[in-house]
Length: 373
Ligand code: FNR
Figure 1: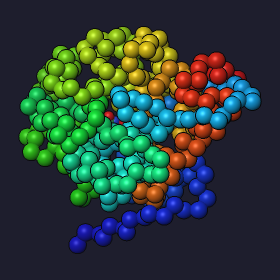
Figure 2 (figure 1 turned 90 degrees about the vertical axis):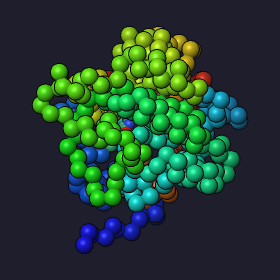
Figure 3 (figure 1 turned 120 degrees about the vertical axis):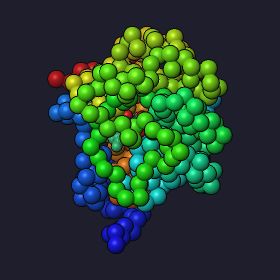
């Protein structure tokens, strides 16, 4: 008989002071294959490393004696309030870390008033996740948590549209189209009982059966990967705000806007797709210069501290996404862990803002940055 799953862990262990502490503990708790899948970058891990190194090179210049009486981390995005400029990135298959998977994550996000982006490859259905949000009690003073749907285009437009219509019907408030991972090698065999349940009923679901052979060009797969015209098509099919995730080049930012994006997510997919990409944070300023005030720009990859959040905002981000750390906290302490991780990050952000003399997110400007030697 299959090994019994360990009972879910719900207690925040003593001594957790930072997101890195959850990472350390999760390394011992998660099965090795799942841990490797979660943590690893592609290739030699150059880009995963860059995502951290780049933040560590950016210094912060404090401003003294600010008036903090009306200070706030609140953010309004697409007409919705967020407690802080921190959202949970779409991360697939969260039941590898906790039996409740994404249901635990949305409960934590709701408690903290933080937004969550549910992956197409979630291990619970998008409808159950929306229902869990509706049933969860928002934390004291927390705004209702935003819930966005991350879309991977499927081979058939009808299948893609089915996902979009389901997300609309379930009350998702935005669609995040991920465009940087259409071609990707993954060797991870999902543990029993964990699957991409939202893709049930799709004959050849993209991103699950797409095991690349040695040859790509000229194969059926190369005939069906998403193209710019598919973005225009999607734009015409939904009234929800549409964000494009995986923009790194300024020219692609321009094209994404031309093709109807309402927001951009600067991301190298946590270093999991093309090794040798620069840190996402290092690509942000050039994209922000093109976008200006036209639309929100989000960024992810290597955000681990409240000081990373202020660095991102100073370089032009509207908000940041948190990837792997949500899964670390989920594995260690379930709902409580993820809520605690979000609280720690927000708390660090408040402290950094106070020390930088920033009372609102708009005060976090480039003059707060200085290179470290
Ligand atoms: C991801 N990411 C991701 N992105 C996406 O658009 N759809 C997805 O299904 C997934 N799945 C996924 C699984 C795992 C295990 C990881 C680690 C990442 C990428 C994710 O949204 C985000 O861009 C990065 O994780 C951000 O980097 P950090 O915070 O993990 O450093």
